[in-house]
Image 1 (spheres, rainbow, N blue to C red):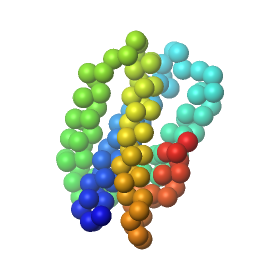
Image 2 (cartoon, rainbow, N blue to C red):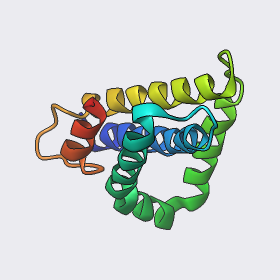
Image 3 (tube, rainbow, N blue to C red):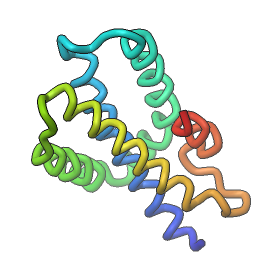
Amino acid sequence: MSNVRKTIHGVRALVKIFSALTDMDDVIHNDKFGFNLKKDLPVFQEELEKLTYETSKQLVKSSEDVLTTMIKNFDNFSKSVYIKNSYITSVNLFLAKLESAKGDLEKMQNTSGFNYLGYDTLHELLKV
C-alpha cells in the first residue's frame, strides 16, 4: 500500500474517531446514560483522546481548515440519521463510526514498519 493510501486511511479513521467522540459526548450527557457505560465510557473516551492527540495536533497545524471541514461534513451527515430516540441514535452512531475507523486501520495492518495514529495501540483499543 502506498504512503498516500495509508495517509488517506489514517485521516479517514481519525475523522471518524473525532466524530465518534462527539457522539460519545451526546451519550454521556443523556439522562438515559447509565449502568456499566457510566464507568467504562469516560475511561474509553480519555484513552481515545490521548491516542489521537499528537496526530490530530500535527494535522491541525498542517491543514486545520481541511480537517475541520471534513469533521463538520461527517457530523452533518450524522444528523440525518435517527433511530428510535436521540440516545439510541448517538450510541449507534458512536459504535458504527468506531467500527468504520477500525476497518480503515485494518486496511493499514499489513504494511511493514508503518505506525500511524499509534496504530498498534489504537487498533487494540478499537478491538474492544
